[in-house]
Length: 553
Image (cartoon, rainbow, N blue to C red; front, side, top):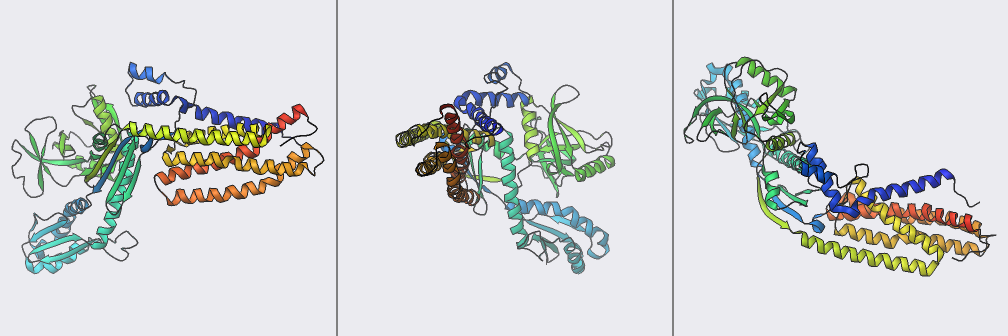
């Protein structure tokens, strides 16, 4: 008997209503976008009258998710950056010096006095006063080597130690350099992604190109320079012991020390030990706050390792100044008053609320492991994007009208049911894209246009099957029921193969190819749903009301 249970009818209509609600914000794109930006700004502390007005432009009880427009539709910034992986080698060698010093000190009777020498980046040179003790020194330093953590470097160690006269020379092994390059690139990709996402931009494209380059595309951002300002800020936070102070930037600080300017004291410089006690890499959280005098500040918290080192140092150096350094500038250099346990503290300075908020964002995202050189930068204006949107709209409308006209001419009343389902098919696609926060690009529009053409395939199969059954079945109800049952396997088989293709495109492709795969895959799912369930529900409701003796398909 041709019937559909009540709970199924409710579920189908509820799904259509949900899709419509999710897709609705895209009809008021600018208004909803301003609402979302204002709400985000208010949550970050910018609770101004202007933001409150913008936030009230869209009802809070309605969904506010939008389909993000890609760079080719909206305009934005394009950067190609090269990561200076050699910077990591130099940092590794600088960090190794305390360990080399500590392992050689107990053997002074054999190796003599130990002295750190100026050396090339990526290299550590240590002079010993007793050349006869060189074999023992080499043995001790080689004991600091660790296995290389990579599949290609299995069985290798991370450092190479050799003698050069009375000097010990330490460098990274080739296997460790390759593993370090890979880690540096992965870390840079993740930090850039977190940094861009957290400052509120939408759906950036961040891809690795070659061995040491990263492609960055961010839709909707004002200029390439604005994007560079977000990415290029390294936010390298260190806590370093203070050796002294000077007003001469060119003064020789001594081996193992460096001269760093004060952020808020013109012409004043601090002499610091180069090796930090704790670094920003050991931070687990940073939040904007206010100090005891009501001035903007940043609260921070270390992981267990950083908390232990921070606590031990403050316990052993009460009464000594301790510099907080951000991007090679001393923010403050307070005197340690007491043992600071627990691994938490506060960074104070001449901050505004916005500056403290941005600093907290950058610290949470982490420091870039190496410097970046921007090889290519481009700002794509919104006019080009608007032309693409207009062309996409025209293509979609032409395809839509042509398919609607064909179905109406070919199947009459049943074609009207199919057209109604086709309209809701597009609504469901945009609702799903809004729900998952997907990015729509020109290839994505092509996927939607293709979906419009494919969406009627299932209905054509069903209607043609009903026509055949009308010649042999006892009545219209039985013909409709058999038409849906017998066309189901062909519909599922055809759409599964196309869906598998969409999945392969998504997994193997990147950028625009993925955008096409997403819209194609979602379009297949919504097309099957509307063809099998929505058109059937409409036909059943029509049949129950009219009870025709014969039907024409």
